[in-house]
Image (cartoon, rainbow, N blue to C red; front, side):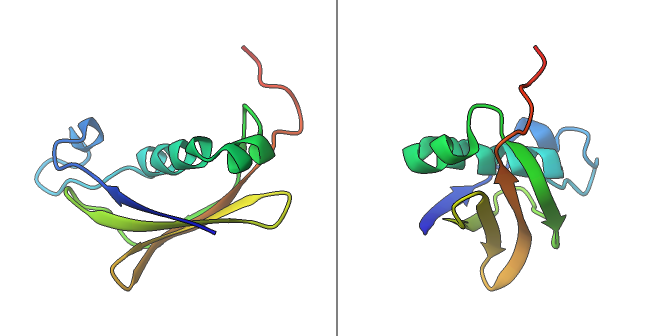
Length: 105
């Protein structure tokens, strides 16, 4: 298992306009943070390949500006599973897997 702490800056550009007065990190931006963490680990990056696909993603709680998240990554040999927690609160879960077909440029 790989454990990483992610801090989402209050000035992250994804907060602009999402939503004015009550900013929330969009799920796609959260997934981008997770896949960057996967790519930073050579073994996990090799498992999912250069164009991983999202098998499942569940967003359970909002991520606000300045949040500190605990990211846990594990593999079952074919997928990279992730869990994000903010303190004791589950924020998101899911997994990435290798693409079954090549990415279209």
